[in-house]
Image (tube, rainbow, N blue to C red):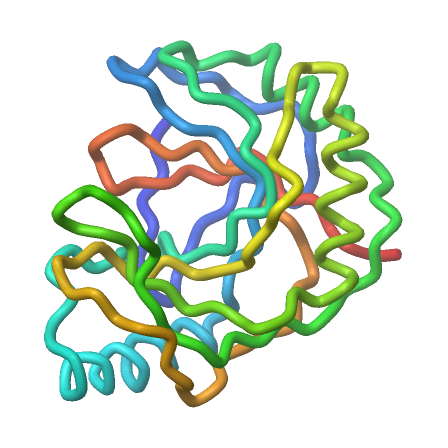
Length: 205
């Protein structure tokens, strides 16, 4: 079962980590991760204000992220060529009853991540990660350690706006933020610029 995501109308699969239909296995190594997603107003500001400002000041980001795919990665879960119902079930089980209340996250810096590839990520980031986000990430790491989920201790919250040959030094931008009320378990299809939300886990304290 495939779900299309359009700007302003994102169709999530359910409101909780319940059972779901499992589709055919992808052909390449797909990515599964837990993430925050901007709300509609934050997406609107990124698309209509931040991106045009970047174009005027630095140039056009050649490979821009689709609005519906904008997110803040919190924890990588797996890279797999198989569409695993068992993996989904274990992540859903491990993320039940999260001890995290909703919190606000803001991004007020623009920069390019360093890399050896011709195109590198252009991101919105912040000087300091919100403590509730750091605590949430640590909680998720502990909960999912039993299924082999690991992560470097360093963590730079960011929203990838796209990939470009431009190299942008850290630059202040008009803040973009939203209230995080849920974390999403996402399947990113390799080479397709397409995300599918497998589960929505509310942050209700």
